[in-house]
Amino acid sequence: ATTRPKRTIRQLPPNLVNQIAAGEVIERPASVVKELLENSVDAGAFRIEVTINGGGSELIRISDDGCGMTVDQLPLAVASHATSKLPDENSLFHVNTLGFRGEALASIGSVSQLTIRSRTEEDDCGSEINVRGGVVESPVPCGCPVGTVMEIRNLFFNTPVRHRFLKTAQTERGHIVEAFTRIALANPKIHFVMNSGDKTVHDLPPTTHWSDRIEAFFGSEIADALIPIESDDAEIRINGYACDPSVSRGNNRMQYLFLNGRFIRDRSLQHALTEAYRGLLMVGRHPVCFLRMDMPPELVDVNVHPCKLEVRFTDGGRVYGRLLQTLRYQFLKTNMTHRVGPAP
Ligand code: ADP
Ligand code: MG
Image (cartoon, rainbow, N blue to C red; front, side):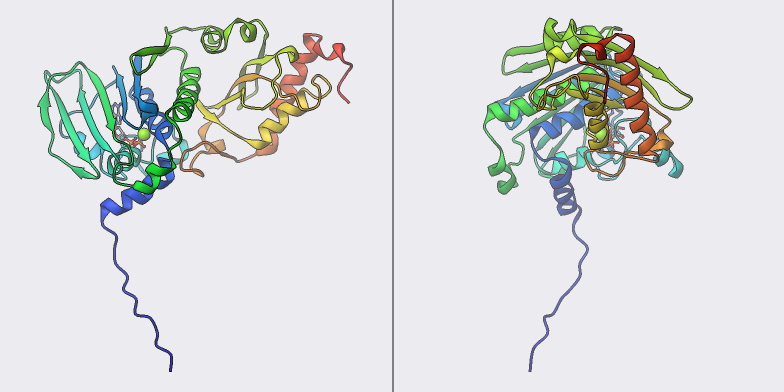
């Protein structure tokens, strides 16, 4: 006779739940930087400074001059599924903040040593909270300016498998710079500073001209090749720049698409870009673009991917068509298509 296995179902302790969630959201140091930068943007900061050591696995520090948190909010900030960004049940379908899942800080705190120091404008004194491998201490008073400082040390110290998957400090730093670039490009009015070790890698003063921010990252060769793109219909607004074909790339990594202020990767929209440049680029070359699309939040679901990198449009075909049409129209207007003949 066969014996059947005995199984007992048990509710997982919150600590383990957070570590599992961290597996989805926190892949590497760059994911921490992305989540924290998004929080600082959501907090209405004017200046955000990032410092990393050892490719981010030793230390990530992000300070902002945003709204800060009161002492009683700190334990909630690091609790899972706790957010200030969804005031009621209906708001999930019209989110206008970068965050809303309320699990980034809980996840980060479960796989690192996290210290938060924060102060609101109304408070005379700031407070500090420490989380180590998911164990949350009581907040204590501390002196700090209005805003928030997040310090993450020894990322993945208690998840050896994750830790072993980390690449060299240089590789991890590259991913962090990319995460920083995406958010700093999406928010030109915010002053961003990035330090690696004791070197300042980027110091980007606030600007109202997007091209200034683009030039600060990619230099004058790209800045000189920017062709302004703009279109507006009742619901979809597109503005930004497509680059002259002379500055094409061998890969599509220089296609910066932002949807409602969020960097996205979308195959269909990448295809629209390729189509728009058809006949203008040699085979194997990819266009360089910086495009911001804005549409009512109801027309797009950003809740399909834990990192929110991919989105789902209610009417993907329409968005595709708008983008393609806008670019083709602009290329015709600037006579660009005549250089190699009209599009097939
Ligand atoms: P989410 O961003 O999805 O709400 P997080 O875990 O990233 O979830 O953050 C939880 C909460 O902590 C936020 O909703 C916000 O209220 C608060 N918070 C996080 N970072 C900051 C910050 N830099 N400044 C002010 N409040 C913050
Ligand atoms: Mg967040």
